[in-house]
Amino acid sequence: MLWIVRHGQSAGNVARDHAEAAGLPLIDIAERDVDVPLSDLGRQQAQALGDWFGALPPEERPNVVLCSPYVRTRQTAQLVLEAAGIECEDVNWVVDERLREKEFGLLDRLTRHGIRLKYPELSEQRRHVGKFYFRPPGGESWCDVILRLRSLLETVVREYRRERVLIVAHQVVVNCLRYLLERMDEAQILETDRQADVPNCGLTSYAFDPALGKNGRLVLRQLNFVSPLRQAGAPVTAEPDVPAAPKS
Image 1 (cartoon, helix red, strand yellow):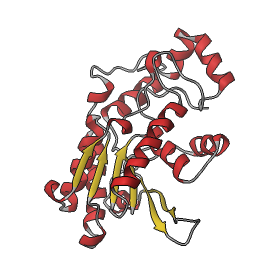
Image 2 (cartoon, rainbow, N blue to C red):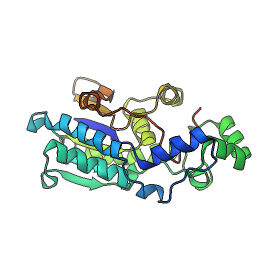
Image 3 (tube, rainbow, N blue to C red):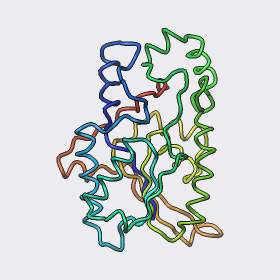
């Protein structure tokens, strides 16, 4: 079993909403992106998801946790395990830099307005090339993220093939993992991205079906599952992560 979760709402998500609503060019965050913590609501969302995992039979709960090194993802994973009643020593917990947020380089902390104002030529280049292939100076394209995630999935298959794996990461990473696992193409993943942002603490899961293909295949079971949050009364949020370039 494989579960993929986006972190809970972060303080950066809140700051981005404020900056966008006010038409500001820069998002007011003092920390490095890697150090941005969860908001109070984000902690509530992670605990609600943990309660859902805790209601599963012990033999169906995660026993491997792969987590981005960012503070907000590590906090989410920790709160999920605590609320589920899963002891850290009972799971194989790995912080893996390949799950880090997409790097936005020169565009870091800029709002849509800020990007158009400060780097109009990059905004035009991105429009022409498309967000799948566009790499901002000092940053990554979606293809760059997918390249490192191919390596990550090879590790999962090699080391955790028969385990119950929970991945806690970021919005672009969740979409790029879906691109790989569901064998999407550029048009399909961009349409998925246009339809909606990945909810904070939204759960996407896959189960192995040995009857599919030559050697079996992971099959999508749940997509952006947020019922645990609603049942616990935790508001569902789906803001883009702070340094994200403007959506198509």
